Length: 236
Image (cartoon, rainbow, N blue to C red; front, side):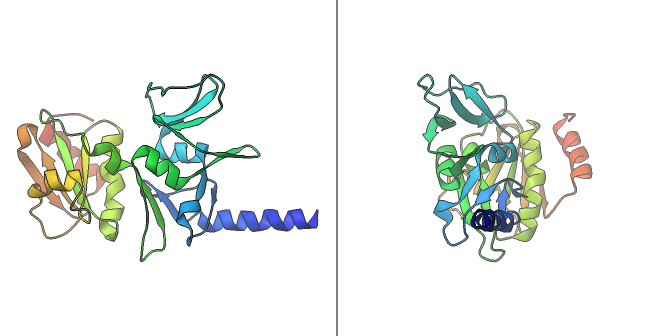
């Protein structure tokens, strides 16, 4: 009994130690985490907790579990009653731990087209699905926010969740350009609109690729929302 208690305490301390180390969409992850900083490939999270952090749905479908963006009705090819876990269209391995389904963050990132990165200065782990979702999300008939940032820049890291809110709420689509990834599709397609010398840098691109306005640095969400409403002629 004493040995079991010690083991539980060690596991709890490991989980608690990671509580302020893992960030999902630039927000501290408050879910269940197991792993060490030195072995990123083995880092595991509770699938329900990561679904909540991503604003995804985790649904039981035909005796399986499907992790997908909220409101999505896409269903992968399933085997009835197989009790498998899918992220989007791909099956990913998991292990059952009492009442938890634990998945490796690396497996989840690969299935969602996301990335897992270690911040060299802050010692944090960043899990981000934005880049993978928006590489082909440009529609020349509507307004877009083109956001230029990098994970090493504190101001850009702080401002990114503000910009993402407009995309998550389906108000103004956001295309994220990681300034450290010159080979990425967003960088190649949209770096020509970057005319500043600091990040974060944001461009409001109108229909047919016309630059409406640019901003340098962090913007307060309230006044910026009002300004975007006036510039786009939309209420949100």
